[in-house]
Length: 374
Image 1 (cartoon, rainbow, N blue to C red):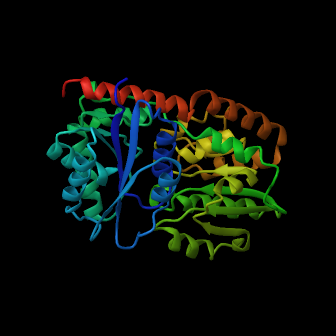
Image 2: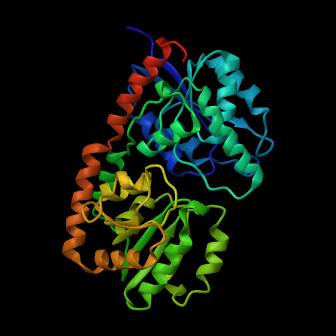
């Protein structure tokens, strides 16, 4: 029997959000007889305790913490090369513009194969960060394989100039066993109102200001709704200040990062998104698998999960008035909400299993070791 392929997952995490949870789902579902999958994370001075590293070590296996002196410390490359050589990794699998740059350079210096999985792109205002993201996009051209999470991201690879022979579309997946466990748990968080909820990073592309505006409008007509926002990010202080000026601020609560996010998700009567840019949102897949109805703007990535009035409700990007109507339909029309959430749950369970996704990566890793460089 041949030895398993040795793969190093590499990410520069900013928390425990979609990409981080995706890595954990993939690693948990890979066949250990075929793939030994370990993790390397960068650790910046203000992020000494990383939930991804803790969870990975507990649920999967070996992890490596690579210290960074600052946000753009290129000394990581040397330290990453040392890890690759000492452990004998054959493939490095990167996630995000920073890990793409650092990981590809380390791969070329050590002679191993490099795979990137783009999870989506960020709308950056800071010029240095914007430059770094642009550089990371250009680095994608030099990977041995690129495996985007959505069809739109595959088109983005074409626009960037990535050789299409290198692109492998592997449809996104979610840890459905974890969702099922919480869904079937008889315990429930208490509530006295209809609960609208959001889970995710609080960053510019999530466009949470629209979400707050829509809630305040609905709350002006209905005294039985509340809004719970789970997650953290650089925009959170600004969002809290904005919410504090709204008329119905007392029914809005920012809960921060929560280990019990699936318990909260189960308690939602409606899950809402107002993003302007996404891959295929993991939180949306979890929501649909949980059987919670969804309303969002109709953008690339989300449209691969939500078919309007079938598996959720969609409004054109920026059309707050229509999205408001969809929120009210799903909150107060029980028959429509039940039909749509049942359709959504079946769709995700049939098409977005983490086990199916991992099987396709098993094959891709094996292919990369024998294929010629393109």
